[in-house]
Length: 128
Image (spheres, rainbow, N blue to C red):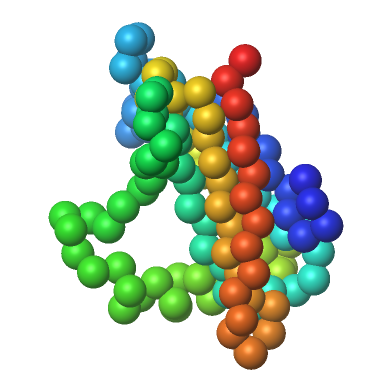
């Protein structure tokens, strides 16, 4: 938690259309990100995992089928900011995390006004 953000990782939601954990491969979790500070103009939330014996971090999300994400990325960031300013958190019901990963990094990049100067906070969760 910070002055601006509350980030919680929890148990994944279950359902017939949601992915299930696979022993020896990956676990599933949920994530909730709340804006507890100033109103924001735009926000992006990125999740990364580590890989044993590597300094490289791997994104848990990407652009579908290698498409360019930039065109709609700004509109999505503004819509998410509006949602969060209205008190509704970002909620990821079910995401995969490789069993071999020992860290989950949540990166939040946002702007507070129309100036557009990005701010960034990173939250790191480690396996027990």
